[in-house]
Structures are given as C-alpha cells and as structure tokens.
Image (cartoon, rainbow, N blue to C red):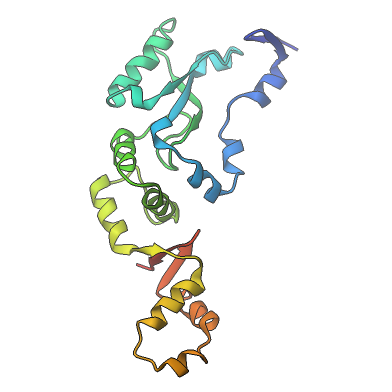
Length: 210
C-alpha cells in the first residue's frame, strides 16, 4: 500500500483518505450546533487541488476569506498557492464558519463575500435567527440579492422567546381577557395550536409561516 508523507508523519493511503478534512463530519453534526458555532469573521477554506489529491497528496493551506476583498482575489491566492500546476482544479477539502449553501467541494458562491459582510454587521442573536431561517429550507443564501433576503427575513422574524409556551403567553397577554379568565387558560395547548399553523420556531426564535 502506498505511503503518503504528511508533515512529519507517514500514513497509508487508506488512513490518509479517512483523515482528510472533509465535510461529511460536518454533515452528521447537529445543524443547530453548526449554526451556533459560525463566526463569519473567521470564515476559512482548506484549498487543495484534485490533481494532487488523485496523486495521493493533500497539500494545501487554510485561506481566511477576510484576507480577500472578493472572490477574484481569493482565487488569485488559490492559484498562487498551487502555482506548480498550470491549470489547477481547486478542491475545497474543508471549511469553517461558512453558512450552509455557500460552498461545496469544487465551487464557492459568487455572493459569498457579500453574504459574509452582511452577517458581520448583525449582532449574534439576529445572525443566529437569520441563519436558522435560511437553513429552514425555503431560502438559499447563494441565490438572489442578500439585501432582499434580509428584508424577507425581517418580515418573517418575530423574536426570541424562552420556548413556544412563552410566546403563547405573550399572545394571550395582548388579548382583552379578564385576569380571572387567564388563570384558566391552557397555554400549552394554545402554543401547540399556534405552532401547527401560523408560526414555527427553532432554538427559541419564532417566525411567521410565510
């Protein structure tokens, strides 16, 4: 079995394949946990090439996206890193602090720098809610204008609550009910009704079902 030298160590090709930075490890993590861990100011990509990988090498480097003004600058840095190849086919073998839908093994979104800049302007609570909203499956960060996407998010987002019952309690408080009637109110059942129709929630964030 062919041996591959990596840094100061030697490993077999089979071991090398298993130890490659790979997104399959990320995919089995809880998606909420991934969202909570995203720090867009530290977004970075491990850049190798398919030619090197097919030849048994994982040579590459982590490139931090904030070091570059746009996608063109980033690709210039990738070409400089792999200037031993005439026409390198870049392989993004791993990435960190990049939201879902903005990068794959062989591609990076045209809008990634605009999206990361917009996220950087949000406070942590708002950014978390926005990424949860996008990750719900109905909204793609890589498609359309980021400003329009944020407007749609603002129209859907209601706020952060301790839980769904806490949101239901607020809704009841806004009703013109006598205080004695509220003591008999089933907030848990009301919450179930609310979130089976007009609203949805995730990690304490509540949204309209649009």
